Length: 406
Ligand code: KG4
Ligand code: ZN
Image (cartoon, rainbow, N blue to C red):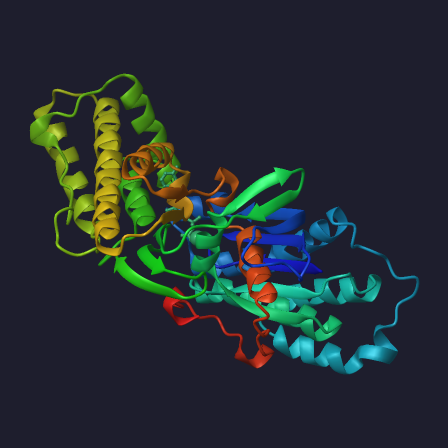
């Protein structure tokens, strides 16, 4: 069957179309094909605000989603033009329903109206859409878009959790052109989720049944990268920028000056929680001290802080996962979310997993940031498990939807 996956929880408008056989054995690897996979990033628009601006994100999603959908349909070979328009006689009622649904996204309605009039119903059997967590105005665009397609073409919708997408993405592996598998893993497992909005440690025996065993008490890791980058005058998003400076510093064997070393907040706390806001404050303080000392140029200060900050975050993540492994004895460790694009963190966890003798699952780089592909993988598993689709009236943007409440 063909699945359309939609993701608009933050600043990426993303659509993927995947194909898979519903009759697969969950005890084995799950196979699927990706017919198209598009991610449109709004980073250039949000950069001037130094972060994601929700109403702007919503507007951009609404402006772009239909165009991306058309591109995906074409690429998947599912775009078939109608010989004649038949909106009027068959679907006048649906038109009114969709128009009301898209009251606040009128530009999307007119584009969709044109599309519905001009193409045949594409061969799509189900739709997966992110319903949370994320920015509510942004989530609503994807949800309303999914509902409009569902109403018009009678397609089932599966409300999908964004963080579960980050978990499952770590199990995805390419096997041939456009062909992928969701790998089997040994249970029980721990998942470390590190993104712009979340920092969580999740324990589970089966995908879909999660327990949160650790979380940040304030900022998320990605958020800390972004805020520290801002205090170093680096553009948004800060993760890749800091990572570049830190990598260069490491290559040049730059040494941290002991009295300017950043703290490792909560590294020895007796729980599995995190706190990163103090680290950001410490960075601002250290920059000031280093500037007052006048021994280093501004560029050198930046390099030093980026290196020490990245080391601090990595050490904290490793220590918390070491503690979690001791407590929960998992056989597998999965890591997901935008921050696992970070090369130093990836390499450190790879070495760590060998030492700890635990199976490590890290997503391919193209699946680390937000995308619809990962949303599709969650729905594929749910459909194979024969989980029921979601009633349209029950699909609402839930900005704090925890993976514990699926
Ligand atoms: O998962 P994601 O794309 O969006 C959310 O769901 O939040 O994560 C975005 C976060 C941003 O804070 C960004 O700075 C961070 O991931 N990030 C990185 C790197 N690439 C992206 N952090 C550290 N190093 C990177 N290379
Ligand atoms: Zn994300």
